[in-house]
Image (cartoon, rainbow, N blue to C red; front, side, top):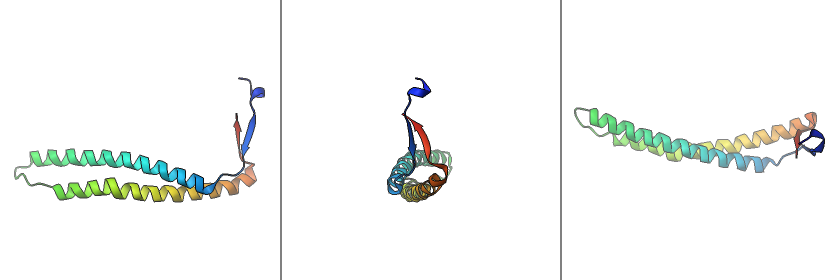
Length: 107
């Protein structure tokens, strides 16, 4: 497609809350995936350690704490930080787009 056939669109302002909600949701999904991976690795690590241990002492409390942190605290904190990040990025973009005249897109 030729450059002359494309329509130019400039994004001069974005919805700050819309961006904040979107980044919070993306952060939630990414942190859930990471939390599931950490939980699986913790379970595998503890089962390997307990099988190699001569005493056979169970370390389920530390596994439970890792799983709790990975599946609850990590997603909650990442969602809150993603929302705050979206607010700040949207606000700074709206301020800077007044100077830079926005982002140029071609449709």
